[in-house]
Amino acid sequence: MAKLQLIDLGRQYESIKHEVEEAVLRVLRGGRYILGPEVKSFEEEMASYCGVKHAIGVANGTDALIISLIAMGIGQGDEVITTPLTFYATAEAIAQTGARPVFVDIDPETYNIDTSQIEKAITPRTKAIMPVHLFGLPAEMDRINAIAKSEGIGVIEDACQAIGARHKGKRVGSLGDIACFSFFPTKNLSCFGDGGMVVTDNDELAVKVKMLRFHGSKDKVSFEMIGFNSRLDEVQAAVLRVKLKKIDEWNELRRQRSLLYKQLLEGLPVKWQQVPEGVESVYHLFIIQSEKRDELVGILNENGISAAAYYKIPLHLQEAFSYLGHKSGDFPVAVKLADEIFAVPLFPEITEEEVRMIAETIGSFIS
Ligand SMILES: *Cc1c(COP(=O)(O)O)cnc(C)c1O
Image (cartoon, rainbow, N blue to C red):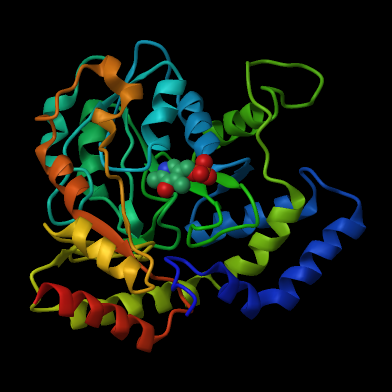
């Protein structure tokens, strides 16, 4: 029996094959490959989807973060507050600008940054907070924005895992000063390679981001800043336009399958990421928490079900950040979760039967 994958991209491809292939051929035959009509249309569609004025396509989610930070004026000597439990690129982007990532521990229920601990991490050098909407669940943005406002600092959303998620009715991407998306193949909205986007309501930031993605130039003749060559290409944009039309339907299916997981796992000695009142997750991953994580991952894999520990090493303990001088006792909640959480298969096309089979395999091992 073929192994049930964490994310089966082949099933999604089957369901949109004709539209996607037609879109790709349209670009190949059209002769415009970089910053042409597909990117422009996709940018307009994404801005409107997120409820902001501007969307700017870039090469990947990591570049989206780096470019957003630089557009916000962040660099050498500055500090940016973020979570130690996220994909490495979040903090790497901060360090790439010359700024220092300052970690704040996470909430044990939502796995997102613990907003009650942000204020004590703020110093005169703090320029921004970069919350991550982890596994598709929006961070506590009203509290984060209130702190940022009273301190006069910026808010950059790392929304790479959370396209379409809502916080108090507003979509991620519209909740801070600027926000970043990734279209890496395993994300909820994905392309056939790398892709990313910066969205913002702020006209000045949008101008800077546009310049930064093209070598710091507005007109390709005069160069005002040291920038990047970081663009979303036409083929990927054409694919993303097809998929953006389906994203709400796909996110709804993820939600339904996740609710089924919760229903089936109820009563077992496991936990999962809690969704607070007023917030809608898009369930980028279905994450289970157990003290027997490693055994469970092993049992699932032996039974033909992919399962994987996520963020096994929190960022403050990564070798690349040893210069920050953290100890393993720092951020105890993040350290505990790094030992206990894992993802089980979840994607819009997974069937109810498959979810039942996975939940039963977990149940028979731990009960
Ligand atoms: C995927 C991801 C990124 C980086 O996106 P890429 O497109 O792979 O560069 C950054 N932050 C988070 C939280 C992510 O999940």
